Length: 342
Ligand code: TYM
Image (cartoon, rainbow, N blue to C red; front, side, top):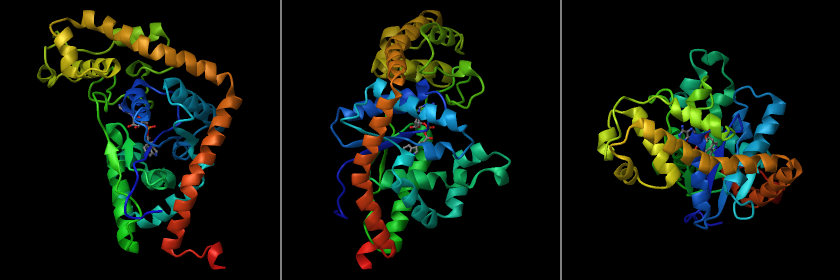
C-alpha cells in the first residue's frame, strides 16, 4: 500500500431514512451514475449507521435500506461496476470512526451547521452519535483512501472536516497515510430548493410533502406539485443573470437544466420570455419522463428482496478487500498490538 500516492477512487453515501427526493437524485444519485461512466473504482453506501443518529424504527430502517439499494440500481448503478454496500456490513467504517473520534476535536464538531440545525436548542438531549456524525463520515471516505466524493452542497462543511481529520492524523503520527479528499460539488443542481420556499433546501425532513418531489411520487402528483410550486409574477429571463434575486424561478430552471443535462443559459435561450404557466407543464413532463422509469424499476426490484440482500452481501465482501488492509495499517500506525506482534 503506497503511502504517498493515491489512485483515484470515488466514495459517496446516502442515508436510508425515508424517501429519496429530487434533491438527492440530482445532487447525488444521478451524478454517481455519471461517475460510473468514467470507469473509476466507486463505492456507494447506504449509511444506516448515520441514519440511527436520530431515532429510526427498526423495520422502517430495513425497508428504507433495501429501497435505497433498489433506487441506486434503478437509477443506473450497476452492482458489477460499482460496489454497493450498507455501512453496517463493513465494520471497518465504525472501527476507523473510533480512531477519528480521538483525532477530531470537540470544537470542530460543535461548529458543524448540521449538528446545530439537527440538535436545535436541546443539545443535551441529542445523541452522542449526532455530534460524532462527521467523524464517521470521514471514516467512510478515508477507510477506502477515496480521493473524490460527489455530494450536494450541504455536505461541503463535512468534507472540509474530513480533510482536517486526514491532515491532523497524518501530522500527529508523522505519516502521509490518508489522502486529502476532493469534494466534487458540480452541476446545476447541487442545492435543489423547496418547491414552497426558495430560501430552504429540498429535504426529507420538511413537514410539507408539497415542498419536495419524491422518487416514489406518481406522474399526477409530480405534475400537481410542480404546478403549485411557488414562483414570482415575472416571465422567464433570457439569461442566467436575470434569475438573480429570484430564488424560486432559479430553482425551477436549475432543476430543468439538470434533468435535461443542459446549462442554465442553454435552457433560457429556449424558454426565455415564456410565462411559468407554459414552463411548468414542460418541467412536469420532463420530470415524469426522467423519474417514472426509476420509480417503476425500484418497485420491481423491491419484489425480490433476496436479490437486493445478495447484492449488499457481495458488495460488503468486495469492500472489505479494500478496507481491511487500510484499517490494519491504521492500527499499526496508531500503535495497536496486532496478531503479527504476538
Ligand atoms: P443525505 O442522505 O442527507 O443526502 C444524500 C445526498 O443528497 C444530497 N442532497 C441534495 N443535493 C442537492 N439538493 C438538495 N436539496 C439535497 N438534499 C440532499 C446530499 O448533499 C448528499 O450528497 N452525510 C451524508 C451521507 C454520508 C456521506 C458519507 C456522503 C455519510 N457518509 C460519505 C458522502 C461521503 C448525508 O446525510 O446525506
